[in-house]
Length: 298
Image 1 (cartoon, one colour):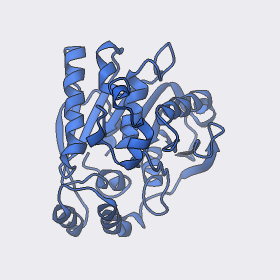
Image 2: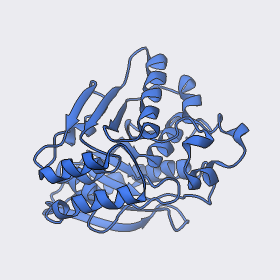
Image 3: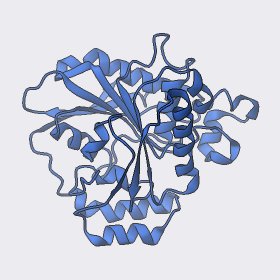
Image 4: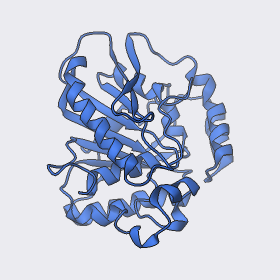
């Protein structure tokens, strides 16, 4: 999956699972294009055995670093134990339906993502963020706070503060998109990142039907505010920066169509379309669990 960090120089592409036990792909296909708490548990069970023996040698992981005063404003980061300098920096923003933002589920996601990128010469960061009942734009603002921490601290750990990439998944991708495109969320000088990856993003256009219960609490009950709180609303007036989009074959339509709608908005703004990765054989969670396994097709 190292190709994901080749952000923005990537053209539209397809990808599929490789080198993983066939029962994983078969299990995901059997589940189909649905998403629920039960699907999450079943997908985790499929991946738990292959994640138990993932490579971690030569990687230093630092946990529970505060980037703000709130209990959820914490991050973990990883880098190679070998000295490095001017390394690219990746900030991972997990999903969670605006009701959770777990940066590490023991034995599963997301330290596998940190280890993968650290093994490939990246200073990798995973950040939790505020969720409901904290209201919009708390989670998106926390993306900015995590990026600010990365910029201030990158050089201490061999990173280049001028090459920070932010990678969001699901509700995390929605928060990243708000930070990137909405001038009310990012600093006046802009988001201050070199590029972004948005994977299976939810609710780039905020509607009541698109939101889970926690999302309704986060964005609020007043539907008259939804347009202004939709990242898509702000794309036309935002400054271009490299963005790579990705979605999974077995994402439900509510979690795949937003990527295509955002792609259309970026095409119109830039007169050039962003890279899109179609994750063949994957569901909403499995790409995140595939990092640092034998599946490096992407």
